[in-house]
Image 1 (cartoon, helix red, strand yellow):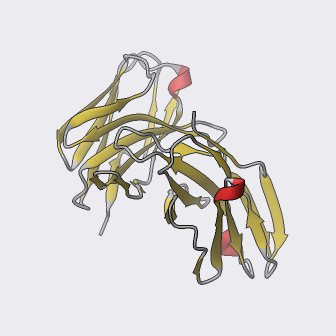
Image 2 (tube, one colour; image 1 turned 30 degrees about the horizontal axis):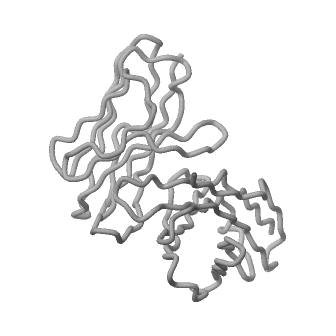
Length: 115
Length: 115
């Protein structure tokens, strides 16, 4: 069975601090996909990144970076120099390779960035 | 340009009523989804349609019936509403090409409150 664990329920930081959101996943598939979504207080779900299981390269996009490690089944997300606008709930999600595979979400991590 | 749109954004109704939520995407995607997000922010898939064909049907009460008139639309009809149906319902869409899983793009959500 597939599972995504985001052990950090809530994280609070002060602006300009770096913060890492953890994501650990379980799957028996050899091909799978990992995603991060952001849900700001306004409520919409914003896609951030997709990674497939064959690409373990870390990714950097501005202040955001992702560390994918198959050896530890983790796909962690780091925000460098956090800003108040980063305050949101962040979801990690996992999908198998088939069209009939569900996108399994973690329970989310609420990040609060204080000025 | 709105990519995935849902109407209405808010829906307040009484127990026992029947209501519908509409979803439209203009991204040219061939797969659409309905998700339910509960009060604890837990996101779970309800249904998925690919080219108007139902491909995922989670354990959802029969009172919920999706309808996909074409690839760009996926509506959700709910009969005999119950208090426990109160939640935010998200529509999403994605491309589906063989064994490559693309990211899903979400609508703004419909907050359903049953009184």
